[in-house]
Length: 100
Image (cartoon, rainbow, N blue to C red):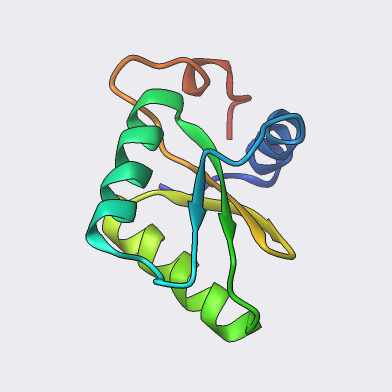
């Protein structure tokens, strides 16, 4: 299931006031960082991740790895910060999404 434009807009608005929950450092996407991303995603549904990589292609690859590992949606990326969304088992945000 992909997000509609309206749903994506709504999630971007919610993510505006969030702080990054996970920070990916120079070591990249290690197993421990990936577990932390999964835990944060299950708990919050909508998370910001700060990626400390200078190369744009590296940041894009890391985002793709997170999307495939967590089966989540990429909401937006601005600079070194990316926003991801995955509907949780106990919905907090997903029941507030506008219809697609």
